[in-house]
Each structure stands twice: as C-alpha cells, then as structure tokens.
Image (cartoon, rainbow, N blue to C red; front, side, top):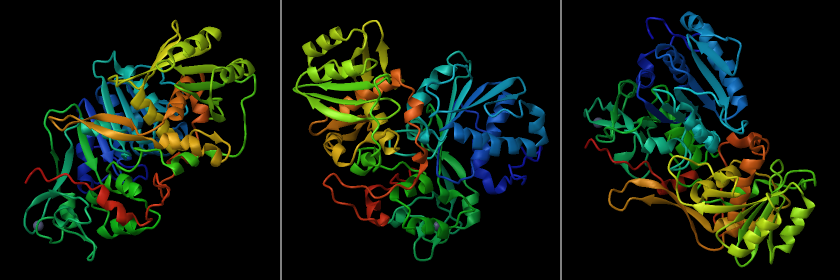
Length: 530
Ligand SMILES: [Zn+2]
C-alpha cells in the first residue's frame, strides 16, 4: 500500500497512521469477513481497494452488491473510477474503464449490482460475494447470491454495513464472528479498554458529558486522540466462521467527543439513528413490531385498482372466516377484506382472469382444496414452515401447485418492506386501521438456547388475531414469484434516516427526547478482558 503511495478519490495520500483500524481490515484475508460499522467512518475507500487488490492478487471474480442501481452508479462512477484514476498502479490493473456494471482487473472480473432493482441475483459465478450496505439491501436477493460461489474454491462472503435491528442484516454475521473490538490504552492508568456509550453507568461510558471529552472508563482521566489512534483489534471469541469488526464513530480519531454529543443532542437524531449510525450497534426498538406509523406511511390516497388485464395477486388466510388481501404487484395492496365463504373470492378470480391466489393450506383443509380445483393452475396452497437453514426463499412446487414458506423470515421481510415504505396501501388511514390491528398482534422475540445462552434466531409471536398479516405474507410470496418485485418495492425515500417518533401499541406517543429512551438499549457488553 505505502510503496505505491495510494491515494483516495480526492487525490490525497492515504495516511496509515490516522487510519490504523482500517488497515487491519484491508489486509485481513479471512475466508468470511464482516464489518458492522457506523456511518462516515471512512471505510468505503478501503472496501474498494480491498476488492481491486484481492481480485488481482488472488485472481478471484467478485460480485459486489449495493442497495440500488442508483447506488451502484454513484459508487462506481463517483468513487471507484476516481480512485482508480488517482492511482497509476490501479489504472494498470483495470480494463473496462468506462463500464459501471463490471470491471476487469488483471484476469479477474468485478461485477457491481444493485439488489432492489433486480428481481433475481445475476447468474454469473464468483469466488467472493461482497454485500456493501447489507442492511439497506433487499435481503432475499442477497440470499440468492449465496449460490453464486458454490463452484469456487474460495466461496468467500464479505459484508459491510451499518446495523439495523438485532438479528437481521449485518448483525447476523456479527453474531457468527470473532467480534473484534478496538482496544486502546489509557495513558494515565494504562488500563486497556474499548470506547462505549452508557448514560447511567460511568464504568461503561467513554465520554464525559460536562467536559465534552473522551475519558477513561477506569480512572476517569482524559483519553487523547493519540490514544484512540493507537489501538489494537482484540477478538472476543476464537475460531469463529467470520472475522468480524465493530467500528463506531467513537474510535475514529478525527471525530471529537463534542461532535458525538452534538449528534446525540440534535433533536432530529432519533435513538435508532444514534445507535445504528453513530455507535454502529443494532437497535432493539426497530423491526420487532410493525408500528402504526410504520404501516400508515405506506398509505397512498391515489386509488389504483388493478385493471382486468393486469396480473393481480390474492393472499388468503383460511380459518373461521377467509381473510384476504388483494393487489397488483406494481400497485401494492388495493384491498383487505373478510369473506364468509369462497363466493366472494370466486368473483375476484372471475373479474381478474390473470389473478393468482396463494391460500393458506393448513387452515380450511376442504374449502381451500376445492377452490384450488375450481381455478385450475391459478391457486397455490401455501404452507408455513419453521426455519430452514440457509435460505429465505419460498420453495415452490409447480407440479403440485404448493409453496412452503418460512413463516418467521417472511413476516420479517414484509415488516421491513413496510418500514422502508415499499408496499403502497391504497385508500385512507382509516381504511387500513383494522388491518394494522392484525399486524399489531405480532411481536418478534429472540430465541436463545436455554443452556448456552446463544442467540438462535427470531420468532414472531402472536397475541391475538393476525390473519390479515399472514394473508399479506401469502400475497407477498405470490408477488415474489409472479410479479416484477423491483417495480413496486422501489420507493425513493428508503434511506431517509432518521425516522420520526413511533406510536406505542396503545396509541400514545413516546417522548421525543431520545435520551429518555437510552435506558432500554445499551451497549452493555462487559469488558471481557477484566
Ligand atoms: Zn485511565
């Protein structure tokens, strides 16, 4: 790196001394790598250099994903190409200089792809798949990319992202990793420690709120920028599947304690934003419930019922009544209703001859089969199953006209898409209020191994009727198969952080002061080096 005098995209020489924590990541050649990071920690240059160098050095083909095609344009056009242009050695390596979607480096290829705008993973094979901004990417498309490395001798997987909720996105790999923390040494008491945030416990708080400086968690004296710069990565666990790094803004020597506090005190900073983008930690409050606001932000009063020539999807949960949702993939949900019997549903199938129905096959055993017989080839029975390791994909049997659906993973997918404002709901808020009540009866909980305490995954627990939520899951599974997903689920303001104030299930608002909420979620890992 230094011998070639590598420069960033602005043409400035990359200074190893002030970016020590980054260079360990650059030279890490582990099979699987994950970086759970805050925003603006200056790692994207490192990611680009790593991708180009490794493609050249190990002669590996690399698929590099970003959330959207727009992100790919900005990233490759604005960053990758400029870094290459600033560095003669990289210019020598790369051909295809004008292509946004792929670059040839020596004998290897790097493919850049968005996840939201493509229905499926590209069919090329690779030795490594790198997911940048994994938590803002489309998770089922990301999972499809897993299969792209199966014929490689390397089969590498790298993820870089700010975290979102616990147990999703980059936090999944973090939990499987050796969990490296950046340890620094107090120059007063020589105590080694990592920088952390806790408002009510001084032994876990690295910032003095009054003096606005970094302080030692042991002796309380000042921690200098030089101390923060000269740290070392220490792994919490040995022999894990992933080499993992947690990068917070606190450990960036160029970010002062004052700046951290300014972000914290900013009334526009939600606690979620502070956790994800400043501390680089997952936020427990998000994604474990579909809040009323999270759902209602999707309501669009522009009514747009599918035309009779259009492909529409019907998701039906069967029980005492038939709860169903209906809508064209491109237009989101037009209607959520309850039917006493199948007559109402027959009418929909008649009126929309291209409509496909996905019916819960485990509830009303007789009626659902009759309905399937009546509308030959247009009705699929959906069966909810438990966790299947390694896949989010619904398993279709086109012979039998059945589909098995991982219940917990698919509920999460739909909740995340609503939270990201990707599924339009046609009508008014009051039209969708009863619908929301069904979602409100679902809460995500953690499954923890009772003996080892190890995190095993998430489960959505139901506390009342959830039929319309499950009907929506069935609808969504049908859209994934029969619709061009990219077209509806591609709203622009996905990355709009921070989000506003959530409503509690009992309709009260919680206090807008982010500080009042910090008690519920602290970076509470003990210093295991004690
Ligand atoms: Zn000290």
